[in-house]
Image (cartoon, rainbow, N blue to C red; front, side):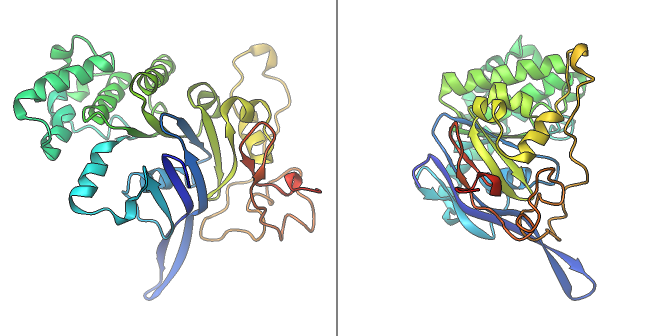
Amino acid sequence: MSGFISLDGVSVDFHVRRGLFATTPVHAVRGVSLEIARGEHVAIVGESGSGKTTLGRALLRLQAVSAGRIVVDGDPIADLAGDDLMRFRRRVGAIFQDPYASLSPYMRVREIVAEGLVVHGTVPAAEHEARVLAALEAVRLSPAAEIADRFPHTMSGGQRQRVAIARAMVLEPEILVADEPVSMVDASSRVEILALLRELQVSRGLTIVSVTHDLASARHSADRIAVMYAGRIVEEGPAASLVDDPRHPYTRALLAAVPEPDPANRLRDRAVVPGEPPSPAALPPGCAFHPRCPVAIAGTCEVTDPAATPRSGGGQVACVRELPGA
């Protein structure tokens, strides 16, 4: 493995109690391998229940992996403890999905943003105020001194999410893991926040792993996209190539579901995929997508779980129709 962040066969299982003694395994993430370069933005895309948020939590070491390993800058993160773990925590910032729930209503913005500085104790207390104001200015919350005195409930959703970004950035991390960073804000704030993340990536050499269900926004904000279905990455590649020339039927289905802003095109036929994603506790045999796939090959897709193969345009795709000789 050679990436700044390397995921090698990562699986995450949960065990749900069924009755007094029995448990049922839930396969949330299944054998994910992915390389992420330093300074790159990779978007993990998929429907609810695809395993993308669980994978993000594993990257933050908020969720233990059941198999495989995650290596950051040469260090397997599962082995970190004590001071090494604290150093890792300082290197990785997190933005959570809901800016209304992730910010304490009892703390002023100043206290929220400074919390990481207080916990880690690497910056003298006398410098906290300057670091907080600089972080607020960096996310375009001005005047920073006035914003720092406010409570979250007095701010809009977009402003709250900027506070969450400032909190993540105040320790000057190298990696940012963002779980649906724009799903809870209005359309205008969405564009501004995506542009802000791109600016931070470029200006600070930040490595970003974002989790989203929105392929359209990922196309314009990420360098690469990895599409997850039922706990697996089914297609991965450069953002422009993957969106302009999707090779997996599930990726094509996600693109067909993107709202069409042009009224003249709204009546076009959409390749809507029927059914719901399978339960991770009862995955179908073969390719997990085959019960919903409009181009499934009878007698093949039900029994074959395809391995990832190189896709045209870069990256990989896991589909029997893309296998050599198919």
